[in-house]
Amino acid sequence: MRYFVTGGAGFIGSNLCDRLLQKGNDVTCYDNFSTGKDNFLVEAKKSPNFRLIKGDLLDEKLLESSIAGHDFVFHLAANADVRFGTNHPRRDLEQNTIVTFNVLEAMRKNGMNKIAFSSTGSIYGEAGVIPTPEDSPFPIQTSLYGASKLACEGLISAYAEGFGFQGWIFRFVSILGERYTHGHVYDFYQKLKSDPNKMQVLGNGRQKKSYLYIQDCLDAIFIALDKANEKVNIFNLGTREYCEVNNSIQWLCESLGAQPKLEYTGGERGWIGDNPFIFLDTKKINSLGWKPKLSIREGILKTLEFLQNNEWVYKSIP
Amino acid sequence: MRYFVTGGAGFIGSNLCDRLLQKGNDVTCYDNFSTGKDNFLVEAKKSPNFRLIKGDLLDEKLLESSIAGHDFVFHLAANADVRFGTNHPRRDLEQNTIVTFNVLEAMRKNGMNKIAFSSTGSIYGEAGVIPTPEDSPFPIQTSLYGASKLACEGLISAYAEGFGFQGWIFRFVSILGERYTHGHVYDFYQKLKSDPNKMQVLGNGRQKKSYLYIQDCLDAIFIALDKANEKVNIFNLGTREYCEVNNSIQWLCESLGAQPKLEYTGGERGWIGDNPFIFLDTKKINSLGWKPKLSIREGILKTLEFLQNNEWVYKSIP
Image (cartoon, rainbow over all chains, first blue to last red; front, side, top):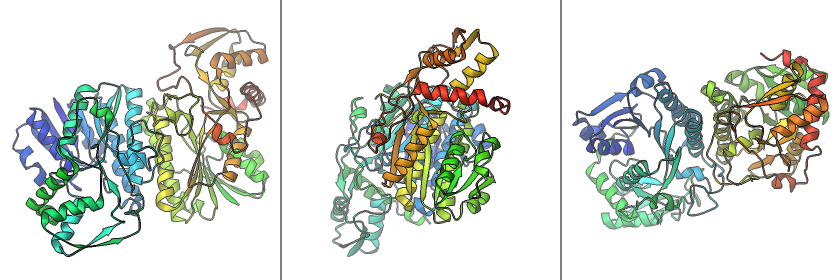
């Protein structure tokens, strides 16, 4: 199979490229390197079946010509900067909604119709039902990021109905593991390295978080692609457990031998639009025979190990 | 109050302008006249409190300067051509999603924060729960139109959370009455006038439809604005009854004294993405003390009366 992976130089995308190549596929990575990293493609580039296109998804012409000839699209490119959404409201619209439209149009014009998409548990807003199933009550959005992913999901579903597309939509909790480069664990390790004796924590530390390890995430995606064959296939991906921000701090500190004085700032929540609790009901994907191999704690420690062995990631970020 | 009405020269918008002026408000109508009509503003233009701006919502500069100084925005402008969405996929994205973003941004930049929005019952896709309540299960979109309105709702909700906006979102069934210029009743009257002896009907005639009379619709909107004061207020608007396409044909024929031979075409449904049954649960708006004064039959006959007295509307449409 010939796969086209948008955002293929990013955290999830580059791991996906590696897995697709390991399975013997042809892979084209399309990335604008706004957050993607060449270093993440070192393995992939060793394969003769890998092709890299540096391009922007807003460049419709390049996208249309690049996407031609592929069998399947993984659309992972996105503005994933949930936290600072209100600082640049247009970014989620452009980088998520419009860009997804461009991908769908490029596919349609090239006679392609199969797409997998990385959505988010943030789409449930302040979920009334926890753990939150895929068919939970019609949510009210609380972030520009969630709203843009909602728009993307709607577009994919409409293309499925209107143009015979088939879509696999994955609503992720936070993913971590190798090549993870933003989020709590990333920030905490950086802070603890620079000062192991005290650390500021945004929010009250009681925010509940659900994390999924990248390789478990990819296993789930491949199982869903293999076994789910509806017009639109929507799956929550997460673990059946959650932790508090304080837990992840504790695990990191234990592993690092640090005993920082914690200073909580900013009230109960982390930031405006930060959801106090994303915990997804994963019965649907579990019913296909998938469950995560790593616990949240193990995933966090794997992530720490990656960060310790790859401190260059901190330097490459503005 | 100073109201800014986008799409104010359209069917619902112009009726709204009239009502707002009758209540003694200042009203600015902003319309690009892609489907709006000058004739619909004859009453409004008699008022010294009415101002008309011919402009496009994609013209951000004009929008920003025009919207300044208003207290409240009714954002009704949209591509409402549900049926031919797949002929021009970009239109819903531009005319609905992007334009709504532009309105929200123009408001934010001008320190405004109150918006009412015309959404649609199409947003529920193929609803599993009928009649469909506002908090029905997370829907899967079946039309580009529904998907774009979903995107707009998400944006408004995200602006409410992120920027302190307050939003009133109305999910309409099909609205009809004075100044109604597209849809089944409009088409059927045109066909029956040109040939009262036979008529083609798209679909099998058994498609269930729910209609609401424009003045009832506006009553509901004003009651909701008056009594609902959450950050995001979402209301289904419709009647507690529905009819089949065959019923509306029958009522029209009775009234016109026509007895056409009906020829059904195109299978069970009308068109791709046409929802076979939109029937909204209106308990939420009913609980505020609103109920429609006109039945569906009465609304259809009022509409027929308008069309008979205003045959110019057929000529002004391409």
